[in-house]
Length: 89
Image 1 (cartoon, rainbow, N blue to C red):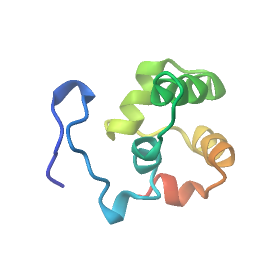
Image 2: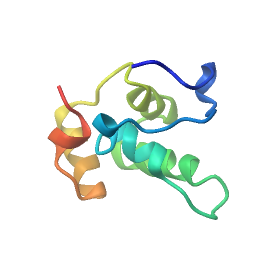
Image 3: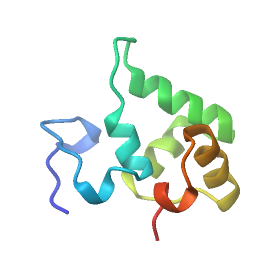
């Protein structure tokens, strides 16, 4: 996949490819709203749910690491999705 965004996670015309629409990363990039930075709120919620740092959640979203199976299930329950959809092999 060719990256369409700058380093440090700053979004620049990022479009979600069809293959990523239901993944954990795809869910993150689909968040929109009028709350002050809803993506940061999402990261905070997931970090609190899994009892990890926000940096860890950001590394999961970036695809650098994968959460443990138990944490995958917790995230999947929160997002009402299957773990296999959010974290494909």
